[in-house]
Length: 195
Ligand SMILES: [Zn+2]
Image 1 (tube, rainbow, N blue to C red):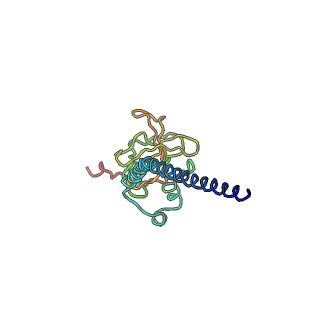
Image 2: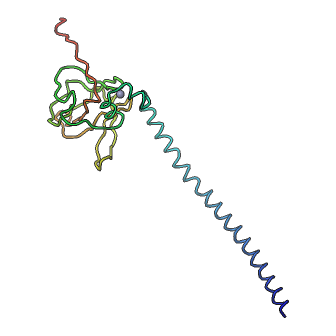
Image 3: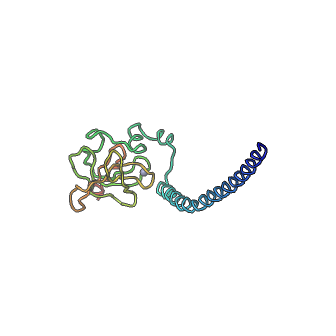
């Protein structure tokens, strides 16, 4: 009696074990199918990331390491241009600067603005209603500090310059609000004296 029960139990246990193996085989197959099916989604995401990374590389031709920029710039210039900082209003070199000439990127020398489009916006930073040779300026959406603003960047070296607002004077109605620390000034040669 005892023997027959234990042998019957063994048979049932054997059947259960076979069933479990079959079941786990099916589960493994299902998991594999899900993994394979999941792959195309991954490969769709990956190229987008690669292409945006390429875009950044193309944008900033004048690439330097942070250490190289630190050696070239003052601490204030480094903080503003390479770390997207903002100088204190009315503290910079050019907010009240009225000489005729050209404003260039302090990092790479790209021509950015001229005194012809500079105006007094009473905001404490040098302000321009238009960029000189817009080819050297890149405008990107900036969502930092809980605001949505347009960041103004040097296209050649990626330096942070300032922000762009739409409360400027005519003819453009735009205000390029730029940090003095991002700019180097080159005085216009006095042509009239030569003539
Ligand atoms: Zn630059």
